[in-house]
Image (tube, rainbow, N blue to C red; front, side, top):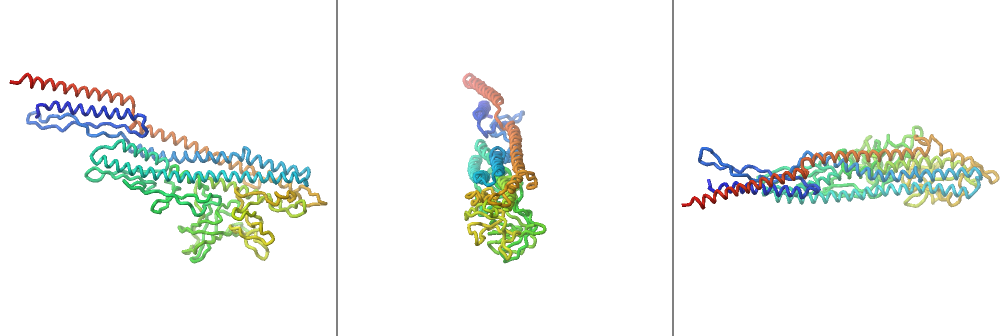
Length: 613
């Protein structure tokens, strides 16, 4: 054994205490650093030396085995799972609050004000039914009523477009984070191949995974392989690999060629993997802000059209029976779009509806752009996507239902009267075809036959024109939406065409039809909710409940994430008081090791300088 062996032991203690001091200083310096994990030194006794004496082996001091992080994989996984749920609720509460603010206008000053004003002006006709000024006021206020819903539609569709744009931003962020995580994984392996722990690089990677978990649910797996300690790192999104060591599988966006719902904005995005595989954001296993954006943007409360289809191979049309929608007011499928039969998706260019005169059940015939590939016998079929959330399409469909039912009732009364010229009343409420710019005329449907137009069928495409009025489109109330409803332009131009009476005698009309129109305001048979205003009040209550639920869940989940993060910090967080104690502990250890060296120095000084011959 070396005579100066004691100095080596003192030196080992000095170096180890110095490493402890540096590690503690590093922790203290990063006490406010986001994502930083507390580091500790793992020290162990040096390898003992065997000596040829009765006492056996002699210790060699201490050495630093490694500098490691105090991190819990269990709490990491728990935090990320709950963070994904929080990201979903937070996104919903944000966009649902916007929807609520727009729909609240119905009750505050939008619908209620214009609706009441319209009936106030109709009431004025009782005093002077032939007064053109009052009649003009009726048409102007009614047009304001329509324009309110036009504006509300525009606002809701703007929110839908915002969701769509945010989906693109989130996908871009996911791809950017995935690329950074793959780059950091390569750096970590490069450092750790020599046996060193890349603690700070791991912190940076974990912080990115935490951020990613807000956007989309993730799972992480790291496995050691090979004799030199390399590690394989895999990050998956709902079972699909996003990061595989140094490689990433990117997500992309693809604009839809067809709308899923009648009122959808054009070109809404779907997400696809870079290998062409479809990404399903609606899966029950999904969470995070991306899922919430899709639910708010596409949520129709699972009210999409479903039924059974019989179709023969080679034909270009399919017939759907036993549908879930048997009312034109509730029909919300696009004029042209996609129909899924079993697992096969076909594109349809138009559809026709035939109504059973006895039962009222609808039969749909869809005209496809390509022939049917395989025979389908009573196969389950659907249009669009069933999204079990009350999102923008749901609230738009509710508005459309209100307008269709109300406009139809109003028009039926108006058309049963006569105007000041003694001519039969026209549709008072109509809608503008956004392609041709022409107005719809309701009440005559479907194909022209020997008895005129069949009132028990209609076509989704409105290209049929009667020869006596080529400026008018003949169709079903299905074509009225909050986007295009308006007052008949002929009545707006000439208020005398407002039909307030059942007959004209000596050029003077009574106002019995106006009284019938006034009764509509109090009609409780029109909607199951009661009066027309009650329908929209129920709609306001629905969005209020949904928004409140989203806000409550957001707060609750935020508290849950904070509690889990505190548990995680109790292990990996930097505690100022604990680090101050460590600072003193390593300082004392350093001083003691220095004292050992000082003592050894005195011993060797005596040995060398005073015991020599």
